[in-house]
Image (tube, rainbow, N blue to C red):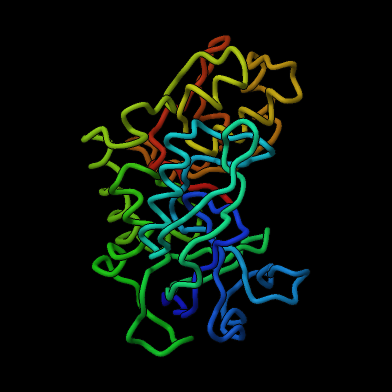
Length: 290
């Protein structure tokens, strides 16, 4: 199935992009109408031109999820890498009193880029593969994304650098060749212990408090979000996490060997023993429901 090619410019000044999200303004705003899902959410109450991209098939460490963040060296590193690969240079960040980043004060902003996208997610972000520079095809045209081209995407480059987790949602199930290419990049980075893979604790760690997740431990961002949500309402005690997660009934498709195509819920791929908790499978072996 084809993707829609949309040309435009990346925007970052006054914004707080993380490793897998960046502002983007289409050259022709009407091209957004070719995507499935809700209308993109724009700045200035819907009257502006800039919307947020959410990079397809990857997840980088959180920099501002409900005023919480994952360990800055890796989270900020992913953001820096993403900005560089999209062509945004000379970035100056504002800093808060704790020495943490707030928003970008200045940069070589509004650089040319393009996206290959199919849909808009429920929060109004365009789900896309992002590319620096220009494309030869006509703006707004349908393009078949192949494995050669996907390697030019910022998404793929983040995986090869070990700065992103492969994170698949249902739409990617239709593109087995693309998913296999992305997975191969992540697996190679993990074997080489690049970036996050040198310190990844998604498979299991002992959680004594939420602060550890912000300062010490690197885990799949999906897990970080669930861990911190639970800890924030349960006196910083992780013990009942799996039971709580079961109540959320979050569907996942498991692609691991011996369980190929097994539809279950997220709690079923979590193992917990007291304060020790983690994933039973690798991140690339899961397909999440939107």
